Image (tube, helix red, strand yellow):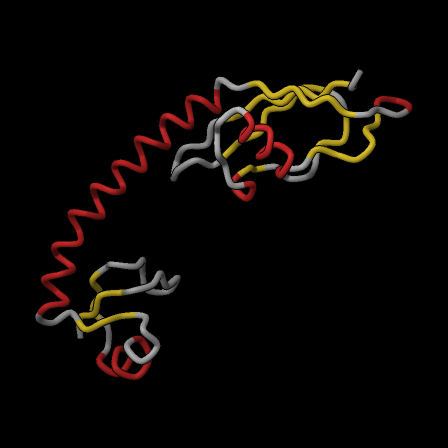
Amino acid sequence: MKVILTQDLATLGKSGELKTVADGYATNFLIPRNLAVPAAGGAYRAWQHDIASREVKRTRERADAEIAATRIASTTLTMGVKVGEGGKLYGSITSKDIADALARRGIEVDRHKIELDEPLKTLGTYKVAVKVFQGMTPEVTIVVEPKG
């Protein structure tokens, strides 16, 4: 049976894809849980029409991501922090702090897209990758220096 997925499924595919599955799987699992709709009649025609609009949207998102990627790559954030003995920071710089600093520069980034394995706890210069779009991860330069 052919179905159109309405949600992303790790085992089957992404939302909006046309898939051929066993009749029982479709009628007993996918359709009752609203994970898919039968690819018959109006749903199939609507799916074909929807493909073009999704492609336009994806192209627009990619163009916006490229602009954001160039802005992020050319940005250097200077973070002034309180420092104790031996250059140790009071507290640390987290992905939320980086996202807030980027937002002050007019670059909106979700903190979960900032690839920071662990918070920055020492003075220095760091390169931190930011996921902007699939296959695009520009690096922002962060300079951690003592405040005052």
